[in-house]
Amino acid sequence: MALPPPQLPNIQAMVAAFDTLSQETALLPNANAFNIGAQLAAIQASLANLTTTVTNNQTSLNNLTTTVQNLSTTVNNNHTHVTGRLDAIDDRLDAIDDRLNAIEGDLRLHPMRLMNAVAAHDKPLRGPDFAVLSNPNPSTRDKLLAFTVNECNASAVNLGLSAFHPTATVDERRRQIARFLGVAY
Image (cartoon, rainbow, N blue to C red; front, side, top):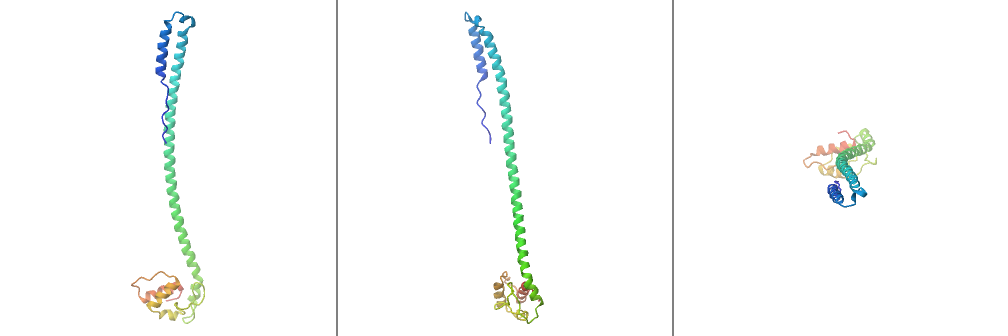
């Protein structure tokens, strides 16, 4: 944010005015009695010092304004950098959270898969809720091996599996269901 330059009095014009006043008062008849010339010279010296001080202050103010502008730019750049880093971290945390959710979902299915993996070919298969599977799902491994394309599609929808590729064979569909249930295929 740029600061407007301060409005300074015209010190040089004031010094010139005091010079003129000094010369004119020297012409007055009793001017020397009051020592006006010496007093005006002292005022001129004070004004010259004031001019130097004001000039130095103006330079300091300009330097300070530049420093504040540089600091503002640095703060804005740092904010942009930190915001970008935080966004990247947030994206990574979202990806980690998604991965953890997938792992957790997979781990919840392990007990079902273990039960189905040790079940005999003609014994009931269990679902994610550990209940015995019923229609439209295969109730045993042997029944899964006999499933048609339509039965595979209905079972996949019921089990919440992703849709089969349109060109997937019946064997590929059975294999995907078997993999989900933990059944050896």
